[in-house]
Amino acid sequence: MAKIVQVTARAVVSYGVNPTARFLLRIGVTPNAVTIAGTVGVLIGAWFGAQGHLFWGTWIITACALTDVLDGTMARMRGSSGKFGALLDSSMDRIADGAVFGAVVYYMANQGNPYGGTIAALISLAAGQVVSYVKARAQSLGLNADVGIAERLERLVILGIGGLIGSAGVDWGLPAALWVLAVLSLITVFQRLIHAARTEPRPAEEPAA
Image (cartoon, rainbow, N blue to C red; front, side, top):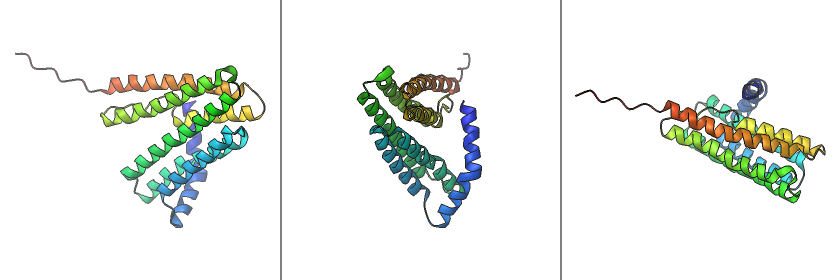
């Protein structure tokens, strides 16, 4: 699934994001401004979702989540993808993810936790944060953990599909997506830990006396 999503994302960048990025740069909009605006949009979408408006919440979050691709494209076009921009982007991603899954937890709890949806949402929230942490911590230690079946984009796609199914009146749609997401997120955590362990340089053997 990851390869399918990545191919689709590249197609979106080629046909939609690049022209938009060029336009925003021409009118003086900065990548950091787009990052912050996208996060604010996700927070608004999360509020709609928490209130039970799954259809509108899902579409607002999906549209605003695309800014995660847009701001990076703008930075590359401008030739200045600085360290602070990367830090801001990662920080806003964590805020957005927390808001989205927090909204799902709130919504599922008010629905009487059908099919264990609240539990699945909590697992997805915690595991999703750990997935991101493992990669960042591994990089800071000189290791490589850039692998996984359910990276951020895949997690948002799965959640979005569940939200749309739920908005169509299928009660089990969102909980089912959350359980799939919870399992895949946990698998991704272990994939990254195992991959990081394999990339750790082995200590040089001491010469024989």
